[in-house]
Length: 174
Image (cartoon, rainbow, N blue to C red; front, side, top):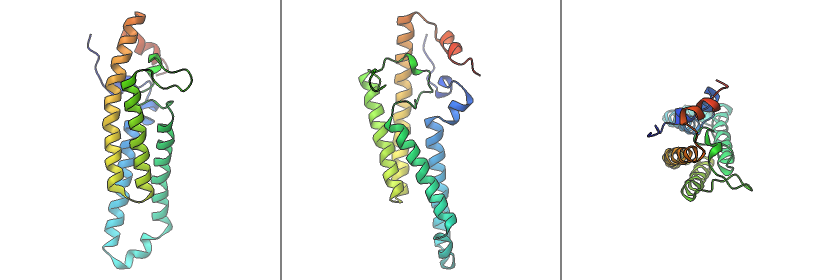
């Protein structure tokens, strides 16, 4: 049976979807674009320069940086799963929770680098570059999702567990 690669299929609950990498990256890009658009719009009106330096704009910038910092911290650890926490069956290194699959590990490491790169660009207010890094992270995430799906499917075969039964067992909290 071919497994449908779809992030939503992996999610254990609505909360997982809200706390998911795809959602978090999409939301951060939207906030950056909104902030940048407002800043560029206000810059067209010299008399609005006071507002550009206002607490309100600083709060928005700080919110974006805090959100990026949160994502960076999560990417630095392997306990916030891109594929929706159905991944407990994926073999992991017992000392650091990293997957033993070399391809998945490499993608995860590169993902961490992209999220960290975005954070640095946001901190420097280089938003276009930050969005580029976030988009690259999202693409890596899709690749991680595909690889995770394959690994989960293989592990379920080894353990003689049906995919649909596994999903039901792991989504009972719905």
